[in-house]
Length: 120
Image (cartoon, rainbow, N blue to C red; front, side):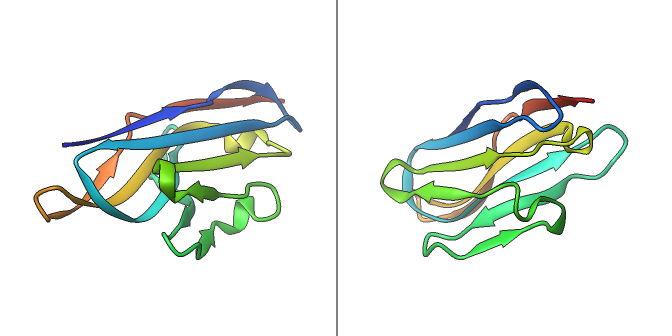
């Protein structure tokens, strides 16, 4: 079994910053992509940013220049520093990891989510 533990959400004023972290643990052989998705009330879950084990990044247009995803492969951890936050960034943020586990199966894992609220 694999677990994803997220941290770093909270309440911040517009223009402020937060830093999300997510660590994967458990029976892990390898992790391909790790990333962050978000879901605002009444909206579908959407990609925020993802990064492969080789460092290739894919960012949503709405966060380019403000959020910069990074990853520590040795720690199975992905980071998302978020700057210049806007009220429209308010959502539950979910960590995602594409894992080959100890049984050799490739699975998509999700964290429980962390709330980010940006006040105007």
